Structures are given as C-alpha cells and as structure tokens.
Image 1 (cartoon, one colour):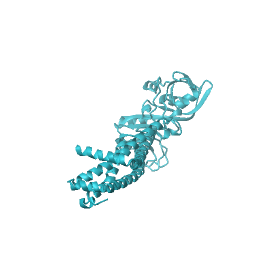
Image 2 (tube, rainbow, N blue to C red):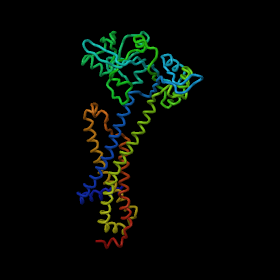
Image 3 (tube, one colour):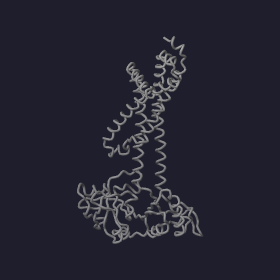
Image 4 (tube, helix red, strand yellow):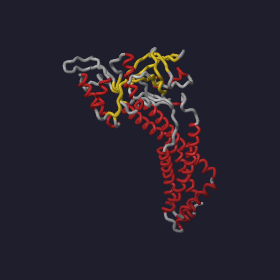
Length: 416
C-alpha cells in the first residue's frame, strides 16, 4: 500500500514539474480514446437501427410463395404453377410442431379508400391475428389489431398504417370511424404505431390497409393466397422447418421437394444473421481504425517515458544503490505510464459521453438521420475502450521501465 502511494506521489510530482508535456500527452491519449469509443458507439447505434428496421419488416419469420416448377415430377412436366391456399396453412400448422405462428396473406394492389372528400390508393391485405406479432404491426393507444372473432364473423373492419391514416383523417382519430374500401363501408379498429422499415414487402406497412383474411377472400373472391407467413418456435429450427414445409407441400402439390423454384422461401432469420455478421465486421474495422489512432498516442506516451527515464537516471541509480530491486523500478515506471494513459482515457471517455449526449438530442427519428441510429456506449464498447487503454499503457511503459531497471548504479551516479 505504501509503495502505491509512493508511486502516486512521484506521478503527481512529474505532472507538476512538466505540466505542458503531461497535458499534451494526455490530450493525445484522449483524442485516441474518443476515436475508438465514438467509432464503436456509432457502429453500435447503426447496427441496432438496421436490425430493428429489418425486424420491423418481419421478426423471425419465413415467407412462402407459390412458384413455378423447373423439374419434372412423376410424369408431370416442368413449368407448372404452384398456388398456395388457406388450407395449406392449416395443414402445415397441424402437421409441423415446430411452427409457433402461421398466417395466410392475401394482397391486392390499387385498392381505393375514401373518407369523406379524401381518397387514397393502397396495397390492401387480408391476414390472420398472428400477423400483428410476426410483422410488428402494433396498434397505437385506443386501437387494436384484427382478432379471431373478426376472422370467424367476416367482419368489415380495417387496421390502417399510420401514414395512410394521416392522409385520410389528418389529425382526427380514425378509430371507430367508417371509411369506404372499393365502395364498401369498413370500420377502423386501429392505427399502426410508427416504425422504421428497411425491407419492403409490397411497399411499407405505414401505407397498409389490413382486414381479416375471411373478409378479404369474400370481398375480392380470391381462391389462392399470395403468401404464407410462418414463425418457428425457435430460430434454430428454421432450416428443419423449411425442409419439412417443402416436403409436405411437395406431396400436396406434386412437385420435386428439391425444386426451390416451385416454393420460394424468404428467410428473415437468415437475413438477420447475415446483417449481424456484416455489422460485427464493420465494428471490428471501426475498432481497428480507432485503435490505430490510440496506438499512435501510445507511442507518444512511450517517448515521454523514455525522456523521464533519462532525466531521472541519477535518481534511479541512487535508489538501486540503496537496495531498490529491479521489479520496484519497473513497477514505478509502468504505473506512471498506465496512470498517464488512464488520465487521458478518462478525458476521452468524458468527451465521448458529452458528444453522444448532444447527438442524441437531435431529431434522429426524422429523415435523413433516422438510419443513423443513436450512438451508444454499451458495456461492450466501454470494455473494449478500457481494455485498449490498459494495453496501450502497459506497452508504452514496458520498454522505458525495463531500460530504467537496467541502469548501472555506479554509472548513473556519474550522470549529469
């Protein structure tokens, strides 16, 4: 304990004697620390925003489409059209235990909506209740999404995206009011919360008009669904689930299970995995760039420590002459190098926190900043920054400390 206080007193004395040198060195380390922490913080914010945006388009889901066969199968020629139905969705749900949620999906372009004198054109969809969670179509306060009774009774109710709701109703609350869809009255039951979407499936959800699938089928006379949306119980079951889906639907529709063109599948789970891997690589790159800046600052610390060793050669010789061991000399200079690096690091982290706080005050939910995300000094970012500081401090002090410990006491006492 006494040795630590001795090291601290020595360090504070050096700071007092060489103020300019210490300030410049600490500033260089602070700048390097800010480079590392800010680059990683912005990378973290961008990653979170991009992943959230993708999940807003589909959270842990698989989307099945009817395609066209490219292989002959049991005497049937290639080129046959595969069309999916609601019965296919029911069959899959009953046959595959790995399915947590499933919903058929009908869609129709250029569907006309009217409220009073205001009109809009949208891509209308007919879906089941699980669609709310699978596509993150959560209602604002006072509204709701489609439920099972709506589907069973074929109710003429509609759930609107926030953008088309504002286009038709302005600042007026749409919930409970009636509008016309292709001239047929529907009651608005809810409005979707605002969300950022990266992937688009026939346009943004903000412009959707969503009705019960039974109502859609009856209103527009559809026999075939546009797609079937599935969510596995566990993301790790996605590949197994895809194999089972292809095998069962291949038997049902008579096509080769290995013919991927007969049943295209959009895998959001794999897409999320790819995006996470891309951003991990990006963060590693940003960390290396910031780390190089900090490394340059560490070279400055090492140079300063060499100067300090040279200036204190006589002092080191006296200490060794009266019995100081090499480990004590090395520990002292290592402590001073790490302390100087730590002082600059604290300044850099405080500067980073201030910059991040100011940036988060900006309207980041508005274009064009909405894709930037909120920079975040997460525990991982802090751990990397602090770890880099400690490593740089040890590296910067190790060689000067070993040089100090190798001083010959007799020669050092003659040093002027």
